[in-house]
Length: 225
Image 1 (cartoon, rainbow, N blue to C red):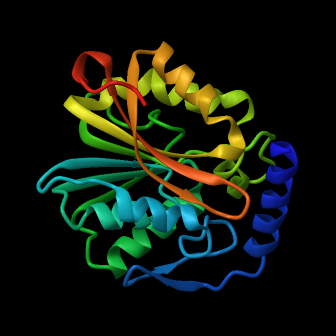
Image 2: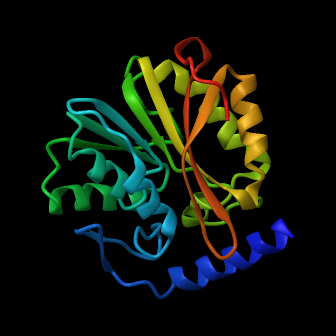
Image 3: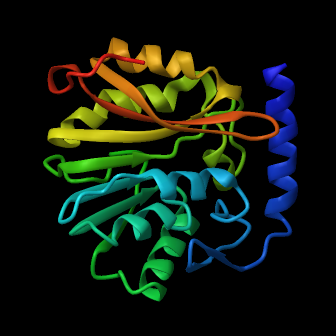
């Protein structure tokens, strides 16, 4: 059943990408996008994450998988510095454009990178926001990298590498879908020394979205949910 729902969701996404507007408004801010970039208005995950990220005043934040930049720009309202990363060149460019248009270009710095590859090895953050792909399948285009993670390989790489880029006491906030066997990703994270709680959940027609907060086991006292 989940495979069928994933297929329905992907077909809907692909159809919409060809017809989406060039400019959208989300939570009082305007974002420019195009058919090569994940739209922050018409996919509910973007708004859901933006409403639930917990950014401390003066903190440093990494937005992994920035898309059009909604999480980076939202985080810049409180953070001292935000690094936004996307493997998709079009998405990285739109993040820069939207940071400038929303008056936070002095706080938001954009890197095109495959996960942490292009990030300075000693860069560390109070919070890493991760909006990963979660469907099974091989991406054929750059935009499809926002949807497909075959075998949870990208999720595993993320949790293998993220600990090196967190400050003591730092956290990861990650969204995931009930369509995509989230328990497998949680098992991977726990295997690699992470613990988690659920910060928020939201039900839609086809799936339920969860926002998880991860910390390293030696930094985290609360039990896993």
